[in-house]
Length: 418
Ligand code: GCU
Image (cartoon, rainbow, N blue to C red; front, side, top):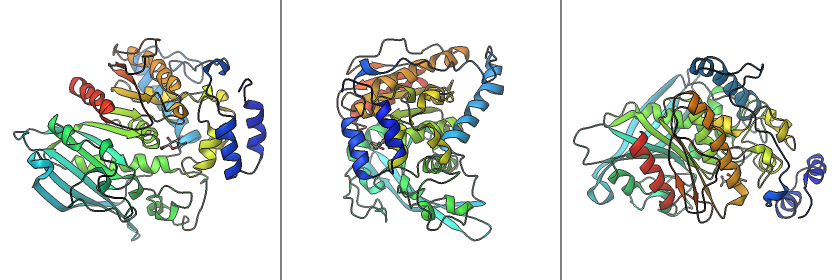
């Protein structure tokens, strides 16, 4: 490609979206050449929409942080639902000798109920270190894609009813429960489909249906809601549950997520300040990557392929990303001063590694304002390199995934910061 594809994208955006158009955009007019990225200005996170400078932590927390959170809510991800009227937790299975005798395994069902009779459930899987000597442990909490049973080989882990086709332990490489437990953390997960089946017609079976009875049969982009907010809500409800677990220190929970669930982890960390650390693994477009670079995936593809992820409001930025008054470094900054780790992979250019790094870098001034100085400098780490601090980044050599290299960095960071 020797010419910037934006003119063609503008035409594409006028066409009815189809698999053929999607393929054409992805294969022939996606920008993978950094020298073609158009000049752009990254919005100053320390300047309010009315032009006022954010000079003190108080300005940040009283004015700038709320206005950014409001902006992302109203213009991109939509609101998180409220809490359910009632929730109960039921331990459905427990074993004291899990993971070769190193852990206690507990499977807990979260039952949400509304005064009007509607109900919804989600199944949490938790491993607790056995050698905690009665001390409360910190935890890693993340949603999984394919069911709790896909994360581990243990027969007793319940098969997710939506994922009966997925063999046990299929995603085990992404879920090193035993290592996490050995490092002294609880390892907690739940399938994201328990909160929103990830399809354009998933509404009727999502947690949104607890609050809105107009969703049965709804298909596509909703005027107000999105699934990323539903998944983020799920993470907060799992954290509520962790608050009731005597063995867990729920003030020290790391929320992590890969890819679309990395976008979700960032949004959860922005909304729920109880999360002590936030991990974005290869989250890309609508996650850690700066949108205005237009490198790799853009909103044209994301919001047309995954119509349920974001509400209508986000669509106005399709092929208009550079006009947004914010960018994703400000989503990262919403976690400040809590530690954030952003990770990319060399063979995941779709997620724009450089854009992910730059977001992490441009969040730095907010951390500095809040008295946290371990932030990134302007040089992007080389492939295989990790930079650790209040804002961290690593650039793994390999494909789009969350594997041992990523986990080692996250665990090392948690050891220092959580
Ligand atoms: C697609 C999508 C990405 C997303 C990824 C994933 O590639 O375009 O935005 O992050 O799926 O969740 O695996």
